[in-house]
Image (cartoon, rainbow, N blue to C red; front, side):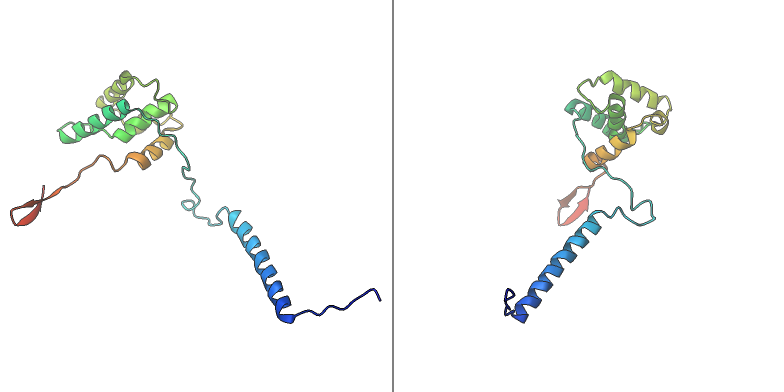
Length: 160
């Protein structure tokens, strides 16, 4: 007799089968969700987003553009600058490389804006302007704006 009979514990056998089924089901579910590209027909839910950006804007460029932004909003100037738009324009113009940044490039942009040109018109032919604007907005959007500071004034608090 070549075939021997084995005594199999039913509880261990059932437990082993359940474990194997759970592992197989987990693998199938993992790969089905990992490969799911979003079956929704809504375009906003399947929009690509920036996963990585090299933020290498120089301190000089940030200082000059932020100063322009703040001064234009604090004065009665007709043109209000947005430092993120200015940086995105300069970056799109130079391929994201600020090593060759020249103040004259910024001065030329400001002169165009002062003459009545709109940023949307200036950037309509720039392929990567929207990319840089989105990336720089994610990094810089909370740094400059209108803020209130709460201070104590005698026995009650007031906003300045």
